Length: 520
Image (tube, rainbow, N blue to C red; front, side):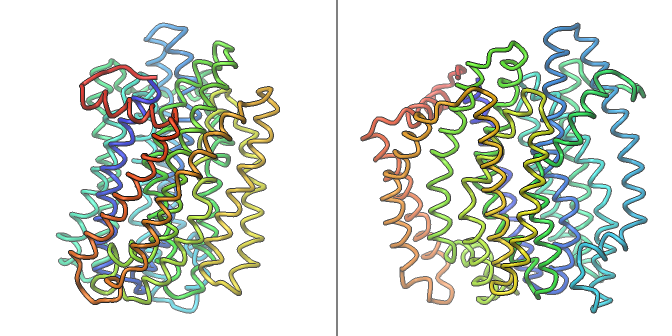
């Protein structure tokens, strides 16, 4: 079930990420690394932070264990009442926060963009963009709650595909609405808000079919609501360490022209494999871990966690090496069009390199944190997150001088490694050990299988075609050939070693092609 669900979520996330790349290519062509782009990406950090926290983590991590317990041990009516009480409480609180955020946007932007203080026009534009996009908080939070209910009921399709609508709305706004406005970047901000509303609305039919369409029940004192609230607050910090660190980077990047844009596009490329595989597996594995924890089956929980870590390393390690070696061709091919220059490509590729060295930690933290949340422990991840945030701030201040925006990206990667090391040490002691020998053997096989990835990627990156202007078809073919050789070689070496992780992936493919429905 975990593998099948992760596969479905991965396919949906892949669709969303592809559209997200198209969206980013459109924005790069239209706005490049101009002051308008910097203003948008600083303002967008707020809704983007909330999307990554709620839609890809904390809301589900706090809600699913409690809702699953209600749905498993009580009547369906009790579970519906809990979901409705959470919906009403969340709607009430977030409406107030959204209104307050719109009013407080000038102060928020002043704190988030100290580097803009000497440029009143850019500061004013960032403030306006923040005010326009603040309602996204409300819509994405409600969408995350709907996703939590549907995922708990083993319905993954609608929640996983809902971000596709977000990207469609943003692209449409940039291409159709923006040219009609005196400040074109405002059209993109409006598209963000409409896209967030679409993500919530898309999931309502699925809730209705399963008898869980939200009703109005204002019961903030509901025992389940209190438990979720107690879990949610620390889980926000625990799950958000990477995003808080990126926000710190955004604040400091405002001192360097173009840096907010370079960091945004660099992290977007990191989020492609992270969202498809890391988030997908963490989302799919949480309900299973929650059931095992609720039954007290910690031996099964250890096995499931070990399986998750092996699979995440199997996928993330080649993605990390590929991004490091192919960073300039990828950025050049996707973004160097219109107002996005060769200098912007070089700066973005450097940010990508520094983020990519921590990709394994970004993905691993998501899996390990999920194990804590399945046991309804959100305090430990929160404490580890505090250490990660402090470490990121110190490293950022030390590295931003000599390395500028690249130092900020590297600090984020190193802080994620610190956060992951703390979490693994605590979890290993609490569970009485994890089968690290199995995880280590799996990682060793993957490292050996990286040889063809390194050779193919280095060959592509060194090709003369990247120095030629234009030739976009040849460059696209070259990159696709390199990726194809890398994937084929990587899987081929694993096949020679008879890797069980490859058997899992091959089993997913056979079931998809054969229409099977069985999974782990």
